[in-house]
Amino acid sequence: MPSATERVARRVVALRQARGLSQEALAGKTGLNRVTLARLERAMHPPNLETLERIARALRVSLSDLVR
Image (cartoon, rainbow, N blue to C red):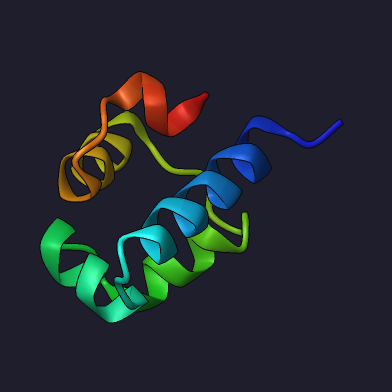
């Protein structure tokens, strides 16, 4: 079973791609560094709650939808 970090990483990638956003574009909308976002998407960097909230807002989903 994948870890919570891996599940969130896959969900961020899926939502970002579904909205036609590049990593650079999503990073710009969240105020995150693109490298940080890339590491998060590869499950190399577990996100904190503030980061998850910023990503959820940028992707226009609820926090619970992002982490399901």
